[in-house]
Image (cartoon, rainbow, N blue to C red):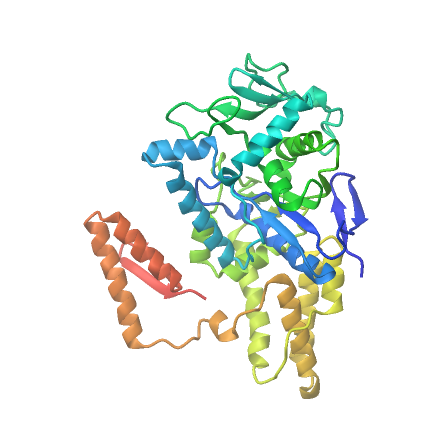
Length: 456
């Protein structure tokens, strides 16, 4: 089987062969940790996590990096509003991000670089760009000179002049040209900053990913992935910086972009306000159903997010887990079927893989006793390739036995939370809520009081 991926750099479906035949490299743009992420932000980690597993099966190894952006103007604003250091914001929301991704079955990357831990590498890359004539210092800033890079726009296929038209570009007096973008900017005393040859300051967003990718994966990486909304300017700028800093060497051989989630008739976006946070959704719904929903459309296409989609995903998983429950007495170990591998080899065709998963379950339900083991093996393997069906059916259906003493303990925690809220001790109330959530207890505040249920 040959893995084929749609390379947005060439706009073609291409066979994928890594530079190192035994260990591909994969870089995925991670979150800016100033708040909880929305479900649209989870699509890339879920889909490209499936890709990461596939690459390991195909080639025997993988170096997978997904960064954390922990210095940013939005982080600075949140820290200033709460009168805390930026680490108080970034540590909290980076931990929440890892927790939420874990709930969705996203396996952590091999490397999770943080921007603030790579200031020396960022400064060095900026110095290389200045020395090569691709960047210049002005009034405490350092800017990349877009006109110095003839291939600028090759990923998004747009002329630089057209890219500027209608774009929100800061036309500052220290810029030589309006499209030049910031690599380093000065920090006032009330903002985080680091010493540099250009004065105390902080990096621009784009240079962070270029420096971190080079530090951990090398000057040329096999696959760079992220949301299609990052294609311009973020990924375009990454290419320009990296290739100019490294003597024209290719930055990323394959570019993969996942489509956006639509919600309420528009692209899900914090700026619009039409978002659903993962942190909330995994407490209201079975996280595996959310994962199934994110895989239900091809990753390059938009996905319409709705309660109906979640409900359909729950019903589908009910049938699949019901099949496994019916086969509980059958001994089987997961083996990924060739049909599932073929679907994923075809540019991560998860809808086809899910259709094959349903077909296998159907065959398992009608199989004769002597054939049940082979079909259960295939069903578990198909789920394994997609990060599904990995829990006990009893856990999915919420049939794990509880007892009256445990119910009383849970009610005691809920009563303590209510008392803390009345006393305006919101820190304790939040801590109790988090403890209950960690135990799989879903709370609903109503006019009649707090209702609770065990999450499936």
